[in-house]
Length: 399
Ligand code: NAD
Image (tube, rainbow, N blue to C red; front, side, top):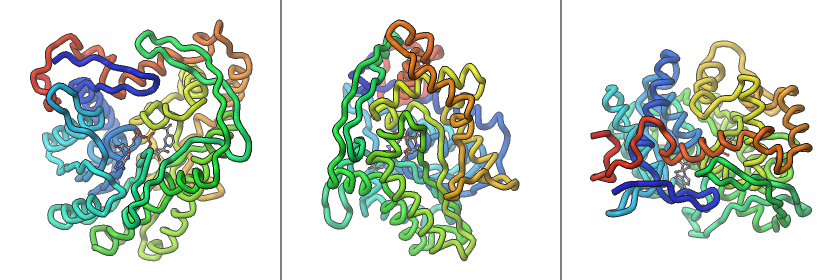
C-alpha cells in the first residue's frame, strides 16, 4: 500500500509509519545530543502519543534515561487503513527505548476510564519502580465520566459575547493559505461546565490519588500538567473562553494536589508552554493565524522552538534544575517567556493589524505552519520515500 496524506481542513485521516518513526527518532537523537539530565527514573505520561506528551516521554526516556509508561487513545492499523499517527509514534518510541535498554510500555485506551487506570497501575506494580514523574498531557474532545457514564464534550467558544475575527484557512499540500472570517457565539453555561469536565483537573487528580493510594508513586514524586495563556489577540477564544475556564480548574487542582501531597516532598506543577502546531492546537479557531504570525516573528528572532526543544528546556532549565524556577504569581512555571517577550508580542500585534491577502506570505509563516502540520502525520520528510509500497502497516522500521 502507498500512503499519502488525506486532508480535510485541519484533519489528516492518514499517517505514514516510517515518517512518524523518523520523527520520533529525530526527537530522541536531538534529546540525546543535549546530554543526560539528572531527573526522573520512572515516568508515567498520560497523553503520550503526540505533541507535548510525546516530547515529555522522549525527554524522560532519552534525556533522563527513565523507564516510561505511556497512555494514549490511538487507533491501530486495519487491513487497508494506516494507524493514527500517535499509534505509530508509540510503536516507534517503545522500539527505540527498548533498543536503548530502557523499559517502555504503552497502553492505548481511554485515560478517563477506570479500566485503563487499573491496567496501568497493575503494570506499574508488577514491573516498575515507583513513578517519580507523572506528566498529564491530555487534549481530548470528549470525556465519558467513569462513574456516571455521562458524556461531556469540550467546546472552544468565547464567554459572554460573540467573537468575530479572521483565521487562516490552510491549503496544506500547497503550503498556502487565505484569511477567512470566523464568528463564534458565546458558550452556554452547560457547554462551559462540560469543557471543564473534559479539560479541567478532575481526571489529573484521579490519576494522582489512585496511583498514590495504590503505592505506585514515590513519596517525592513530581507531577506536571500543561497550560497556555497567550495574549489579548487569543484571549477571547482561549484564556477568556471555555478553555480558559478549564485551565483555571487545572490551576486549582494543582494547588489542591500540593496541599494534599506536598508535605511528603511531592510537587505538583503547571507549566505555561509556548504555542506549537499539534492536532489539538490546530482545532482552535483563530489560533492558526496567530501561530503562523508568531512563528515567523520568533524564527526571525531565532527564539522559535518545536515541542522537543521546548520540553528539553523545561526539564533542563526548570523541572530538574538546581537554580530557582521562573514562576509567575500563581506559581506556574513560565516556559512561554520567549513567546511573550514584549519585542515579539509588539511585532505580532503590528502584523496582526496589517495582515491581508496580499501580504499574508510575508507577515506569517504559512508554509512553516503547513510543514509542521504535515509532519505530525509523518509526511513531508526528506528521508522517507512516499511513493514506496508498504507491505506491513504495523511496521515502523524501514525494511
Ligand atoms: P496533542 O493533540 O498533540 O496530544 C494529545 C494527547 O492526548 C494524545 O496523546 C492523545 O492520544 C491523548 N488523548 C486524547 N484523548 C485521550 C483519552 N480519552 N485517553 C487517552 N489519551 C487521550 O495535544 P497537545 O497540543 O500536545 O496538548 C497537550 C497539553 O498541552 C494540553 O493540556 C494542551 O492544552 C497543552 N498545551 C498545548 C499547547 C499547544 O500549542 N499545542 C500550548 C500550551 C499548552
